Length: 81
Image (cartoon, rainbow, N blue to C red):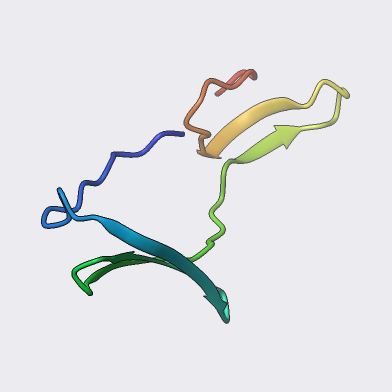
């Protein structure tokens, strides 16, 4: 799944001095330090989300999908009622 790209105005043309990363609890921090003594800080946190949730009929062994509660964003096989 691709999400929108993000630009950060104000950093164009700056010269990178160094890049630093560190972890703190469940967060990963990126810091892009520039030669003008400013830095761009980005933090990343993992998260879990439901990809799909379905009700199946398993009585025949065919595992027919009776209901989609949460659909995956990409195509899926299975019948819906």
